[in-house]
Length: 331
Ligand SMILES: CC[C@H](C)[C@H](NC(=O)[C@@H](NC[C@H](O)[C@@H](N)CC(C)C)C(C)C)C(=O)N[C@@H](Cc1ccccc1)C(=O)OC
Image (cartoon, rainbow, N blue to C red; front, top):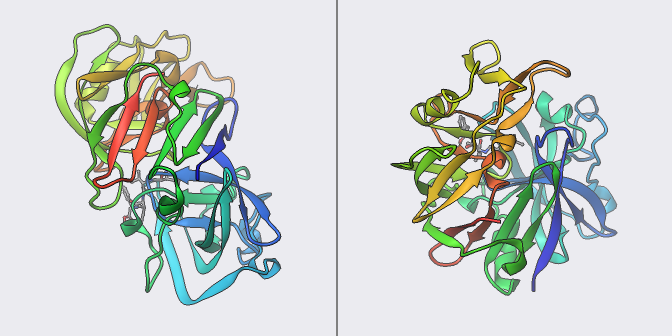
């Protein structure tokens, strides 16, 4: 079995996130969810979510699904690195994405969500694609959609082909050779504590020399920007006239008229180049001549994150085989 589903940018002006249509229950209820390799909970806005915290999102109503079953006595509560979070109850129900159906997927219904989720009406929940060890359901952790679907997929993989301000795809169970150029370079994955953690072999700024340095970080499809060590980020923004690390804006800002250098990162003996245009993330406010950078320091996070700004420059294979590996190809 294999499937393919679109990854639709939430805001055409800048790629805050990407959502993918899924159906849950019988008869099928359609929601648009944010597929997140940086966490492992599948949670949705629901008929249980506090009305004051719902603002236009589509919701899942288990009481309208003949195949929904309450997972009695189970709750969940999650906190993300950006400080956002949500919590609630758990059902199992039929879950389909791109034609791949899992019949008793744990679907976590939100009772409460934090303000950043309420304010993003185009994101109706998340599908965690990290390792199931990170799942927050208590007392028994639940499996991700990918872990449940793996045995029925032609190959135990999913791929991310995210695009800059355009619709990309998530594929399940197969690798589409038409989506990349050259070879895929596979790297080992550290699965503890449960992210897709890999080590990059270094970086270059623009057409500058390559700096051989190991950078351990996670591939996170639901983090908009890319957060790397301060030394790396400083050497990048030093090349941009007028760039400053603003306490006020919480990161590097620069004149929107700047022509940004590209950023190349090593994957084994190969490399991926992020075009400078991807690193011009957004104006700090509508119409401002000052823009916010898509490459920021990870020093406050305690973890390096290869988020959408990096992922959309590549074709990425999340191989759930034994052992798991992560594959990178140019496109
Ligand atoms: C189970 C919790 C999941 C796995 C959570 N994952 C994350 O926060 C990772 N992914 C973050 C998500 O991709 C987030 N950007 C989704 C959007 C829609 C809110 C970060 C680290 C890149 C996490 O690690 N939370 C930390 C909190 C944290 C993380 C990083 C820095 C600071 C604080 C925690 O609570 O771990 C138990």
